[in-house]
Image (cartoon, rainbow, N blue to C red):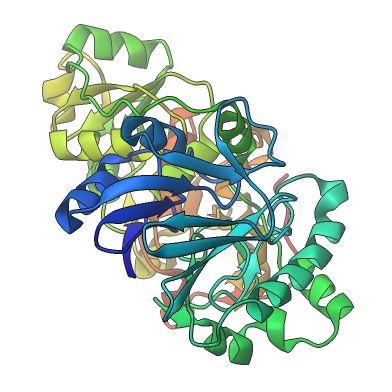
Length: 457
C-alpha cells in the first residue's frame, strides 16, 4: 500500500491517493482535481474509487467530478442526503480496491454522518479519519447546528475511541483536517505524521477518562470559524460542478476605473507593504503569498455574493482563482499588472503609513486609537493597553462601532491588519497599519495588559 498526500496548506487540509501499484482510491479530494490526477499519472495507477469522509464544511469537494471523469465508484455515506448518484456505503461495510480492503467505520462527531476508512493490504493498515481523530485532537463539533453541538461532542469522544479499537496500533493515521483548518479544535499538534499508537498516548480525546470533562473542555475551546462554511455542505450535498481555473481576459483601464467608482470589490493581491504605499483608491488588500490565509480571510470577510475583481501579477491571479474555486467563489474578473497607475491611469491612487512598534511609540498621539483586529480569544490573552478589539471578520458589519480619529491597526503578524486598514480607508477612515508581530510589542516597550474586552463604541 502506498499513500500519496495532496496537501492544501491554504485551507489547512489534506487529500490522499491510496494505491496498490495498479489501482487507486482517492479520499477527500479538493475541487481542483488536476493535482490528484497528476499524482495518479506519476504513480502509474488508475483511479477506481473515490471516497468522502463527510460533507465538508470548509471546502467544495472534487469527489463527484473526479469519479465521473474516471468512471470510478463514489463512496459516500448512505445516510447523507445527497442529490447525485453515488455508491452508498454503511458502517462496517468493506470494499475491495485492487489488493486493498477498505472498511467504513461510522465516526459521528464532526458531522452526524461522518465516516472514517481503515485501509488494509494484508500486512499493514492506514486509517483515514477525515475530521474525526486528528493529530493531537479531534474535529470541531459545532458546525452543524448550535442545538446539536453537545450531542456531537459526546459522539466525537465515543467515535474516536471506537476507531482506535478497530485499528491496528501501528497503523498510520491520515486525517483530512488539523493542519491549520478551522475545522480542527482543541490542542491540535503541528506534527506532520502520526500513528494510532502515538495518538493513544497523547491525544486528549483518548487520554481523558472523563467524557463530561472532555466535552466541557472541547466546547470551551471552540472559537469563531469562517462565515463561508455555511455554504459548503449544502453545495457538496447538491453536487458541485467542476472548477473553472481559466484566466479571464484582463480588464481595460476604463472598466477597472468604473468598477472602482461604483464601489465594487477590487482585490489587490500584492504584498501588503507595497499596497500601503500605493494602490488604487477604493481597492482592498488581500495579499496573495506563500503561507498567507488569503482564501480563508477573503471568503470570511467580503460579502459571499459580491462580484470580485482581482488585481495583481499573472501568477498571483492564476493561483488566487484556483484557491477561491475551492470555496465556491467562481470566475472572478481580473486586471493583470503590478503598477496601479498603469492599470487605471485615470483612477485616483491612495496610500497609508505602515510602521513597526517603534513607529507606534514615536508617532501615536494622545487620543489616537489602537485597533486590534485579532479574534476575541487572542485579545483576551494579551493586548495593547487601551486597545479596542473588533475582529477582522466582524469589521464590515461593525464599522459604525469603530471609534473616530486616527486608527493604528494591528493583528498578530500584519496580514489581517493590512486587510482591515484597507477596508477602513475605503470607508473614509484615517489609518496607520502596524506591520509587526504582536509578540514583539512588549519587548519594544509597548504597554500590554490582559483581561476584559474593551469594546468599540
